[in-house]
Length: 268
Image (cartoon, rainbow, N blue to C red; front, side, top):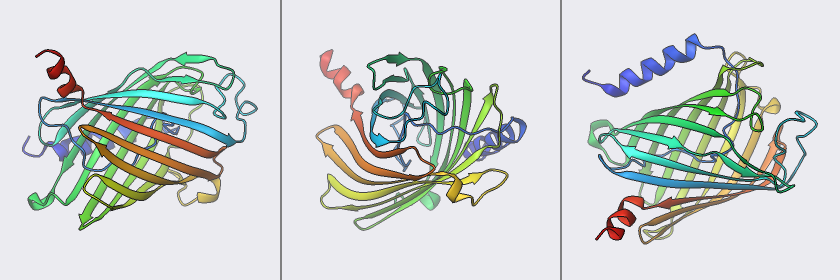
């Protein structure tokens, strides 16, 4: 097909329309997608970490689920560049440690991301990401979940502006419900070529059937620091949850590991 991006979008929307719609946030990953892509044939690794310092206990909501309060989550995300526009990813394993020290390692998710730069302009992009995964009972009552993400963004001088529209839904499980919609945004300013400061927002706007119900959805705003340390990348964030979000003070760290280069150095 001449335009694989259009094929992915059509396939994702068709799958979304055909499935029973229920939502669940992917709290192993707190990230606004921009135009990051691995080079064709290269491997990458991002390690997602987050911890909830304060908030409301969620044990009363679902006694069998892991409480998010005082929980540390760590998830490696492996990626592979298929072409200049396509990248595959695998989250494996999904792991966490709860407030009582119980360790849970149960879950895997796969994704396919497409990014394009209209008219060849590297400072403007749009794209789509589709994610499908299975998680353990401690993370979700519904084992199979998916997300369809639309992406857009631009760079203007030292400024970066990016937005995602995330539609989360259940593929199979005992508690079907309408899919939820979240708008994720990022505004950042480059202090130097390797350091930028910004603000990230993760704002639920309701269900797919009943949008614009922000008062009945999770909301989070985070201050973010992006740093390049040699061949390593680091995204740090401190945020506050409000609305229906039970997590009030959240910290995150995404560590970009140059595994391709480390592997080549180790085998010289």
